[in-house]
Amino acid sequence: SSGSAGTSGTRFDLEKETELRFEVEAGERVQLELLSGLAEVFGSELNRNKRYTFGPGSKIAVFTWQGCSVSLSGKTEVAYISKDTPMLLYLNTHAALEQMRRQAEKDHERGPRVMVVGPTDVGKSTVCRVLLNYAVRLGRRPTLVELDVGQSNVSVPGTMSALCIERPADVEEGFSVQAPLVFHFGSTTPGTNIKLYNKLTSSLAEVFSQRCEVNRKASVGGCIINTCGWVKGSGYQALVHCASAFQVDVVIVLDQERLYNELKRDLPHFVRVVLLPKSGGVVERSKDCRRESRDEKIREYFYGFRGTSFYPHAFDVRFSDVRIYKIGAPSIPDSCLPLGMSQDDTQLKLVPVSPGRDLTHHVLSVSSVDDDAEVGAGQSRGILESPVCGFIVVTAVDTQAQVMTVLSPAPRPLPRHTLLIMDIRFIDLK
Ligand code: ADP
Image 1 (cartoon, rainbow, N blue to C red):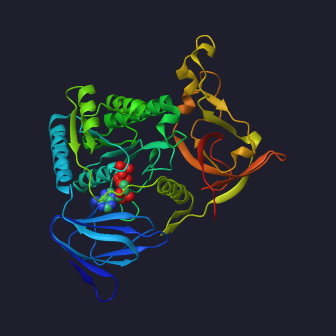
Image 2 (cartoon, rainbow, N blue to C red; image 1 turned 135 degrees about the vertical axis):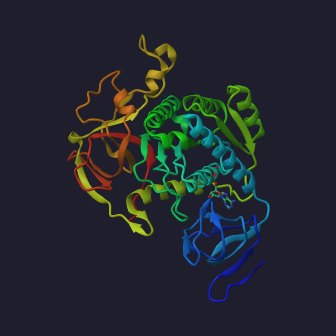
Image 3 (cartoon, protein in one colour; image 1 turned 180 degrees about the vertical axis):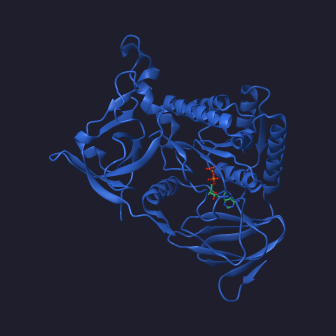
């Protein structure tokens, strides 16, 4: 039931185990306030009498276990209450994972490693967020592993990362991303360089396992792995690879029975594969919509998120002061490969990029690799496996003067001089 909230906005009264779903219109903002009862947004509890603001295009569900009243003000594209939500199934899944953590604690074992899979737009990220929130609310310290290079919840697009979760996600901003471990992938789909994708998955698994060896809470907390929506061919193989690299115990398949059956067939029998329905509230996003949210992620990296503004710096970088690489040479027919070289080598090869006008607008990762590290044939390992310490965008190139102007979160000089180019461009309109 809905009606006027009097002072401002529309009041919605929700019965227990129902959710209010709304979408914010383009160019608009919507404010949400909890008037009475208890409610949560994707597993983060709402505070009473606090106004939460959601920006254009946000798609939100306010769920209540006990019943509540909320008010919405601003222009929503849709706003309706649904009684039909899979939240109870998600809560049961959380309870089963928590049981595994308790067992792990008792037996001095490691906690559950969970991989969430499914096609695009089935709510994978949302399920990860709910499970992580419920775990951290019980005092656990789970790790979010973000393998979705198209829509990362941790860093800019084109990266693969891991983040230790220490508090519930902020209702408006999501998980706080202090000190994530980020690797450069360079494009928004794993298919661009599947060898590199699998290699970085292994690197993340290795780092996570090492952390678990020295940090008991991280080990018991386990991890929740968010994956890409590409579930066929090499995309499917990448999921199988990930399951083995992380030695996952549980795979949650959202919405697709075929994928569920394939994984049941192909993963070792001790891996529990569960099929869960997607929420009717998950909204399909168009290509444009996805591109916009990628852009927004990059803008946030440089300019901050609404409340907290950052002031990025612009400065010139001399070509001679940096070395720029692209990872992966274009693939060539096997018969043309130099003797003793395999296709793997070409995909993981560092190819020097000579700076030119076509660098303009590209996002570059600043590698944390030692500036003095030798880079030659066969020595790309150090760079591939070094995390990224930040990102810059090339805003202009002057070939005559041999300099490029960059947008950077920190003032000059660059912290390191090895740069990795992404396929991804960002046009700075500020
Ligand atoms: P995936 O990771 O599978 O691509 P997401 O978890 O990102 O999917 O969900 C897609 C969109 O749907 C997101 O904008 C998310 O906020 C929204 N969404 C998810 N669950 C709900 C829900 N129950 N009601 C309304 N919107 C939802």
